[in-house]
Image 1: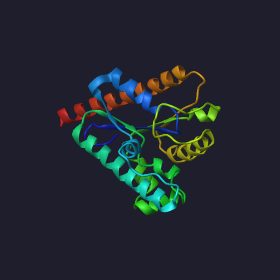
Image 2: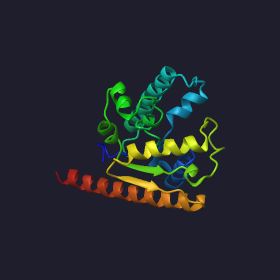
Image 3: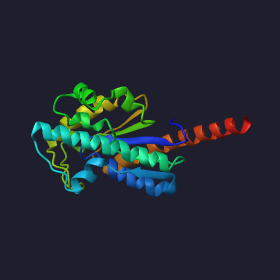
Image 4: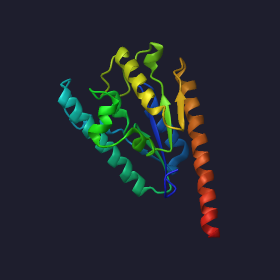
Length: 208
C-alpha cells in the first residue's frame, strides 16, 4: 500500500463497463471512508476541451488528460490521507487512445508502465458491455465510441492494466446487477485488506 495509510484503487475498463456506477454505489455504501477521484477526460470534455481525429490533436488531448488525472489523484491523496481513493480511470488509460502505441505513449510523457502501475494499490477492470455485443449508448454524454471501437479499446486497456499484481477482472454479464454485485464484492475485499494493513501499521507505530 502507499504511504500515509491511503489506499488508491483505479476503476477502469472499456467504454460502457459500469465503473462509474460501481464507484458511486460503493461511495454510498462506505460513506466518508471513500473519496472519488473523477475521470479527467470527462471533466475536460464537459468543460469544452476540443476533440479531433487529427494525430497531433489526439496526442495533445491525451497529454492534458494524463496530467489532469495525475494531479487530481495527487491532490486527493494529499488531502485525504486515511481514506480510500477510488480513481475513475487512471494514468495508464491514455495508452488505448494514443496514435503511436503503448511504448511511445510512456516515452512521450517521460514515464514508464511500471512507474504508473505502482501509483495504484489495486486495479478493478470492468469489461465493456460491447464485448457481449450490447449497445453502450447512454450513461456518459461524452462517449462517442461505437461497439466495435469499444471492443478494441477494451482489449488495449486490459493488456496494459493486467500487468498490475492486484488486477481484478469484472467480466461482462448479461445481468448488470450481477456484474455490479461482483465488483462490489471485490471492492469490499480490497477495503478489508486495507483496513487490516492500517491496523497492523498502527500497532507497529504504537509499539515503537
